[in-house]
Length: 203
Image 1 (cartoon, one colour):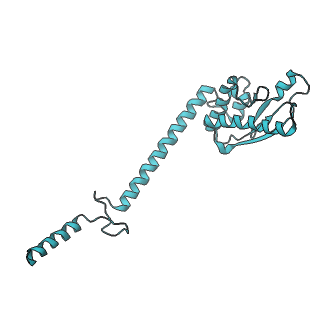
Image 2 (cartoon, one colour):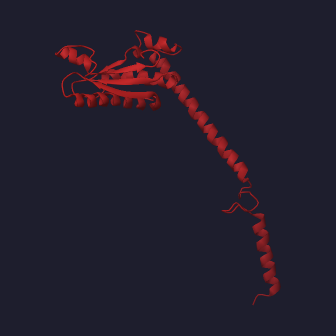
Image 3 (cartoon, helix red, strand yellow):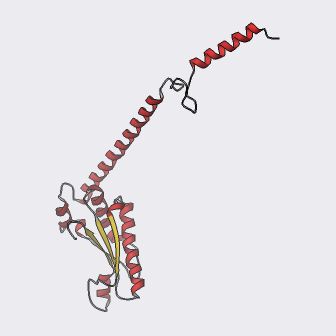
């Protein structure tokens, strides 16, 4: 049977060991330090600094990508309106045409939309409205829906390419605002479209 003096020595040693390795419990008690000697405040400060560094790195990466895209599409260093009005530039193309009864983006417009997405990503002032239109065939209700699907398809493409979603608005006019009047394919083709309207330039 263990003597009382030995038991006392064991308990004393256990208490001393616990005091040396004191860490905060779930209620925040203890001496305020983790097992590695770092205080709770120091840990919080370090984690905040690491998060800020990660955000800064991500922002710098985004700025570099936007600058590279501006060089690629030819609007680097241009003023807002100048870039949009340059006749030979991709940004001057602001009407996207569609096949009959379709909301699929045709391959020939992918580079144009990529340029618009890059421009919006680089220029904070760039806000757009996407107007969806159709030809006169079909009911008014159907064409309003088709016009919206076309505008939504353009918006989705732009967002996938990096355009900020909160600066894109979608509206459909269906057959109500034709670009060309007539009852032949030439007129219908011009009316199956989405128009990209920039703030400060087109509206």
